[in-house]
Amino acid sequence: MLNRKYYSFERNNYYYGKLLTSKDFQQEQGYLNDKRRLINKVLHGSGIVYGLDVVSVDDLSIILQSGFALDGSGREIVVPATQVVKISTIDGFDSLKSNCAYLGISYQEEGVDPVYSTLADDSSEDENKKFNSIHENYKLYLMDEADCIYTDKKEDAFFTKSVIYMDQDIRVVQIVPAYAVKGKNVKVRLEIEKTSYTSDVFSVTYDLQTEGFVERDMHVAAENISLEFGKTVVYDYILTPEDYVYGNAEIVVKSRNIEIVKNGNVEKRKDEFKASIAPVLESVLECVLKNSYKGTMDAELDSTFDEKLFICKISLIRSGNNVLIDHIEDAPFKQYVYNADQLMIMNKLDDYLVDKVKITADNKPVITQQRISESTGRETERTLASGSFDMSLGNGGEVGRAIFSEEIMHGLGSGPVYVEIGVEYLYKSSKDKAGHEEIILGDNSIFSSVEDSKVYQIDTAVKVLPERGTFIVGVRPKVKTGKISLRIRWYAFKPEDLEKKVTKLKEQQGTIMIQPDTIVLPPKATVHINPVFVNMAEEPLAYSLLDSEGGKVDNNGMYTAPAQEGVYEVKVSCISNPEIYTHAFMIVSQKKSDEE
Image (spheres, rainbow, N blue to C red):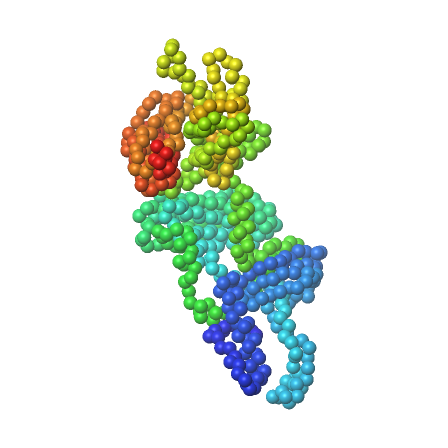
């Protein structure tokens, strides 16, 4: 069962009266094993699936924990029980020459339950000795780090990893993505790993020639680094591709003039490392899907490769003829098999991790929600909204009977939002023909005794639906009322918005607001967007739709709704200072037209 040529497949054809021999049963087993192993190899890859952790017990022994892995041929390697192993008993120990060894594990078969076969082809004693069963087992190996062979993985086709410098003390690796996706920057990563216990202070500098990027040539400098053994420091450099490179030939990033300064000693390298980046117009997902299916399966299966999986790195201390365990690290080549469970857990965990978190004076976290504009791809923030609507109590509200509004969209997106509501009152008198407006928030009965104030005896409440980005208002009359219609004014904001408002008032920063900022209108109708300038003089504004199918808006703020119902967003910004902006939400609904 050590066959690696899995196809084409041929299975037994059973029929009544067929004479079955050992060859037929071997073919039956081989057919099932080969199909399963082919799926393992091409669908899951090779590496550790579960367990197989290695920890040191003492200076001479390790604990190999139970686990499961797939080798390069798709064969299953199972360690059924945790066990203690002396490193001196592992194959390859006597051949070790360095202070760093890799522990490998490989698939192995062995016959069990020996029997004597009288029908063997050869009459010799060894040929007549057969086994009733084949035990699928594993074997451990120890190899010097320099002799270990890295097995390519699928992800290697998407990154160029160059070891630009390595000695007995440090290892310097540069990682460059193989593709540049339109609309995204490119990150060049420099990883510096300490591989010895010496107390070194070193610097790594070199020039990065980046033709085809906005930054052009860049100088990479990692200076005055002092690391402990086994630690790694990472430097990231962001490059912005020029627009003209997309759809053209590959961009070549060159690393040259490499200089290593260690403990005052300078070493200059003449090596030049090149990494090709292909500019593509598709998305990251489309790029991965398109390129991960390339290749020929027969070449993959016929290629020779090391069957070992290296499950840990063991640092040794040599003292004469004695070899002691000093330190154990995880799988050095990061050979793991990833599965759908991990993606689901990652997605669920990501829901509890927030991009931006601020800590207030009372140590309470404040979350800033961000949204991406589909038309520009830029990040915009919106944490405050307000609006008003009419709510009828019918032909006279019954005492104690609750009346509810429809769902109101606040426009701040999903997530926790604080909503405060109040009732608007418009008073007119002979002296004040124009009238004046009052808005009462909270318990309005407090103002019932105030002269010239007539308020409704009602209780109000708000129910927020975070996942839907909406809220519902509930009203319950305390006394018998006539046929009235309430004008409800609402304010919604993210928690940090109060802090922003106070800061802006202190700094006297100019802002613009839209009154109202949420407008309901029927399809193809027109409405004028009314801006209000706060702490600033009136000035020309720019109006833009964040949805290409959201209708039309001209330079005077006249909005024309599309025929399609929906919620559309209009960005209003100052022409002189585009950083001062706000948003208006247009709810296009036929229901509004029907009610009118």
